[in-house]
Image (cartoon, rainbow, N blue to C red; front, side):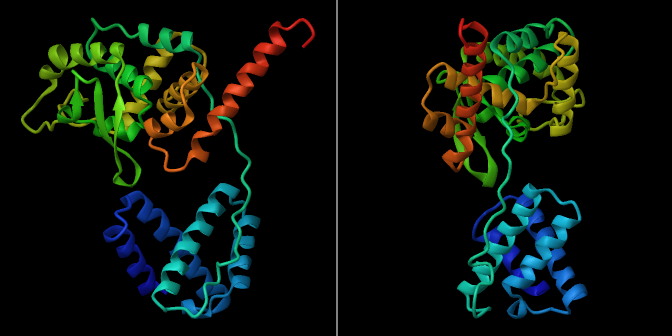
Length: 296
């Protein structure tokens, strides 16, 4: 089974072009399953795996306290693995063919309201060291709905001030164009012209956002910066980079943007992922109705 897992991971990397993180996650799920098969059922060949065996394994993981969302990832990994093996004739029958994905309770994403976003951004004092950089980062996260990894990897050559467009590389190495608002462009221009040159060192790359050492900011460091800036803003809400992405989408929707356009800007492969924001907007409308309608 180990050799077939290796072959499958190479397929994901070379033929599908999937990210390193996805490959690592899938390999971990498959390797853990293979180890359980060997230890608990003395099964080492994929051809001997049945749906009953897979169901037993999933039940074991569930009893062990694994969350439904994590079990779903395992099921997906097993499904694409055995579909791959079935396609090349390595197994007679796909044992995951009728396997269903576990239902996951969907939690509505948290968001900031527009006044809270403004308070967060305006609290960043640009006259202080790295203030221009940090304000530009927060402005861009909210203006374009970027993932934290997309912000870390954003490059100067991909930013077009005239068109107010940034080309980013998202999940699965998929590239997309995202609009950059006027306020974010102004913050970026101020940072790039006045502060970034002071951060550049011999080893610096063309990433837009640099650390004080001239290196690319890591996602962990960006998370820390946003948390620190939020603490100084006086807002009591738990603020983190992805919260700004949620707020970006929710505010677009509540102001009349089309869901398909929001999907494209967020880089979601499936519209169902974007539809969660319609529920957020419905909750907001219900809350307003309850608060202000005399017979609510």
